[in-house]
Length: 321
Image (cartoon, rainbow, N blue to C red):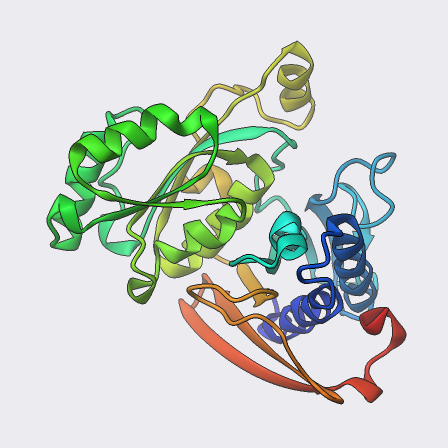
């Protein structure tokens, strides 16, 4: 893929963050998501690429924009798979909490798992612990392995999980092992990414969350040299059949990085909407707005943090609505 696409993706996530940031603390998650989605789509349609959404806002009859299978871009090469979450953390924005992001990933056609919208069991770690964890291993064994790889005691580790009743057993096992826990209300893309950055203080992600978010996080961790392992969790025959229709021959298979991201030529971009450990949220200052973004390329291993100052009077209406 063209190197210039990295900067184009930042334009996409910045627009979505600016548009949705106005809704922080409003209690209106759907409005925030709609604003992010509209802004993201408009910017995508200015980018020189032939993109197909493989991770999106649902099927065509369920989502007015950025649905799975939708075409994005100006319609000429390169041909790419697009994974999007215009607002990763709609409830986070509605309630003014931490770690909401606007997120996009790109890969050459066929480079990303076409994950259905269902739950996925996940475990994620940073670069030092790659190859050391097993999604089927006991929690204590994975904690010991990560502690050893990171040169820490188990008591110094921080495990992050979504705060859900389904994770009660994992939480209890982590506590019995003596490790520390960070429970999050939503936003496990940010949580997975945080395992790849020492300064966030997060060592491992456990538990189940959305499968589309798992693929997005896997692209980010691919760029960072980290690891995501997953397994789809279809809840009924209909979801099982949907996996088959989307080309997943064995829905119960353990999905490793090579299954989730099938290429070294992947790009990941995110802009903070609300403040988090990794990125600051949008800041509105009169006629200007400031953004804080991350863009990474797996092929080169380049990681860039970018600050932007945007003059609102020069922004199109789809960003300001």
